[in-house]
Image 1 (tube, rainbow, N blue to C red):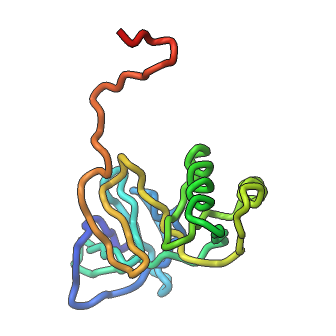
Image 2: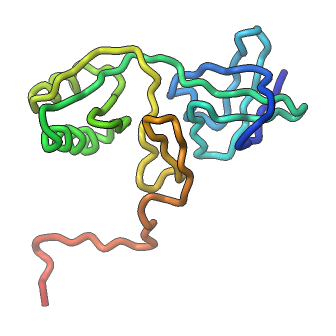
Image 3: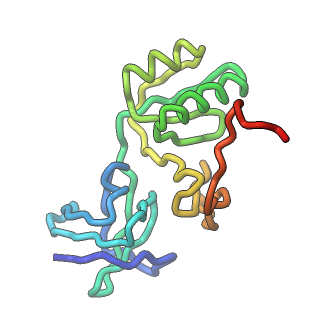
Length: 173
């Protein structure tokens, strides 16, 4: 069995591609099969999310490229940036994994969310597409752009050691 456990930035040659849906790319421990039928085990640090075009190296030096599988999704668009922002707010308020694109949002298909978004004035298109949701403010530090480029950096927001919750009843003295 091929064991993949090292993420690398580039390779001169790729042994195989591994097509995975997002749900499987979120797992740091995974056992699956390559298109050739060869079993593969993935062991990455906890919290690692594999993204489209990521490269993993095996103990034997072979390189496998991760490919985002096409999944049943909704492409969400609106007639205005304000409308799209409202949709993004409501999806975030429901902790919905959301891909942010240029003038669109993409989510996994869900009839309840579709109805909510249509109620907000969004146009919804069902499509099978690779799903690459945002990693979140405290996520693993990186994001993709529609042009296929990945930009790695630290967390998108400072991680608070302690956070005071302000309530309307707090005095302002």
